[in-house]
Image 1 (cartoon, rainbow, N blue to C red):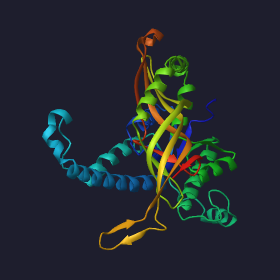
Image 2: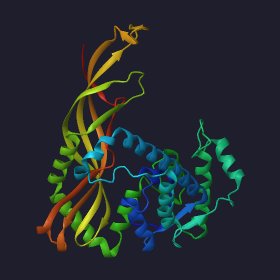
Image 3: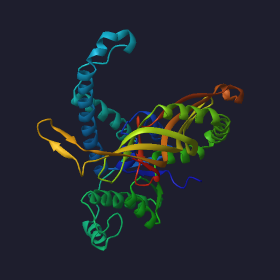
Image 4: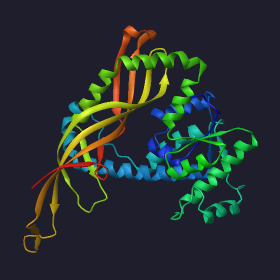
Length: 360
């Protein structure tokens, strides 16, 4: 796909998909592209405030989890030679937040990223869209959609004033609907997709990108085998809109394939991709039915709980960062370097799974 503009707006949701890890991984590469002026990044004052608020919540949650780990894992202090030490430092949420804010500011306050104010947006335009049910609003519109509407109107005005189209990067469905309805917007579902597009349209990287893709194809078997090894021992967790909370007692993977790759970074020695795997597996669950059970007040336990076993066939997609090497740009030096899945817990969608067996 040909790059149509270098003007880019990234929604808060797309940053959150990357866990707000500014200066690292995909967001680190984004910062490099901004600094090299390969893209011109817009961020509204609303999005900036949203991210700073979310960074505060992330910092508080992370420190809370760290304190729980220090308490529950205190025995590990006896095994410094195994753990490498340093597992139990005293940290505060303020210190973590300050560090995160500094890295965020390195992206937005670098003299290249453009801060766009929403002050000039006409509120009447926004409320007209709200009452007509136009995207990003709908019949059950929430107050959270108003910031999105103001941000999109502000960056749209900037792009049109310069006679440029604008990439709108967001995994939010309402944002995508706005982009499709606005002939000046081009929607991209992720920052990965943006980086892939920029890398492949960079004259300096075009030949390297093609070469890296061919090396990846050569190493595809190794990549899938490593994905299989990691998922074989992984922790899976069901998600469902059902009232029951089943427990997984067995999973069996039947196939793994690569469904999508996005080129994040490439040079003469290695390349980094964001890879989406399609995983077919069967999971068996225990369902506990309390509808006929009796609660014993003295023993504080339910008696007569009925347990049933159900098996479902799932088709899920999981994303990972992949690094491959080809020292000195030689195919003979092709090697698999690293595969790291984005999440440590892999969710199984029961609502969209196929029920294949029931045994009591």
